[in-house]
Length: 282
Image 1 (cartoon, rainbow, N blue to C red):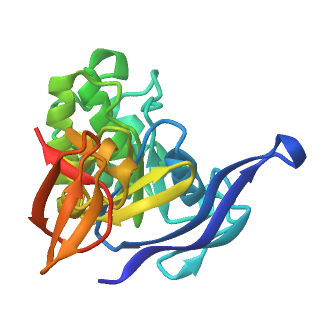
Image 2 (cartoon, rainbow, N blue to C red; image 1 turned 180 degrees about the vertical axis):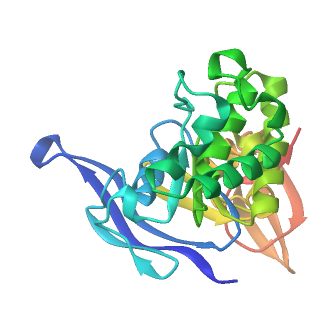
């Protein structure tokens, strides 16, 4: 499958001199066209900074960023084929649902008939036709989220960036919106890049996940691969509900190894020589 986003050797440093801070280091990433891709990690790991670099709100200190084969590093947000849905939704309170959805199209100078047709299509897509004339204060949080998604999708971006868009919702509504996001992504075929610190969200919704910490990508793969075969202790501890046991190989014979546990007990099992995190599901 063709790559929609290609990132090579990308780093981001804020500030200069002794006060500088390296937010991203050596990011290498390829996101396929039509993929639901998630950047997952704890607060401060660099995932939102990477999203902002893709969006054009931040410029990389070094490295290459290509979208649909075009180098965009150095270009502003308005010159990139992307749109962003923020955690706060950022809807205009004085505008109706329909006016909010059509605002970006009007700013692009689209003809009135095209704006009206696109708004009607987006309202159907997010199932908000009956609420087109209401204002944001007159609809629920989940409905506001759908309006924000419709507004971002209306101009037809190649990539939709979502910065923890479900974090302000209650648990029940968050679960419902997870399904809505997957449906919208499937129906539009647009590449989604989703940022979250919620492991369950990432495992449930994503085609692939990049687990990040301290400005680096620690592991990249499908939810199943990351859950079942974590690359290191941090990933094993961060993903899912697990017990992590520190083991060492005491001896190897006939294709089997004796593993030493911290308490001194040994357990015989078939494995390759070496050591690493061992996942035990609760």
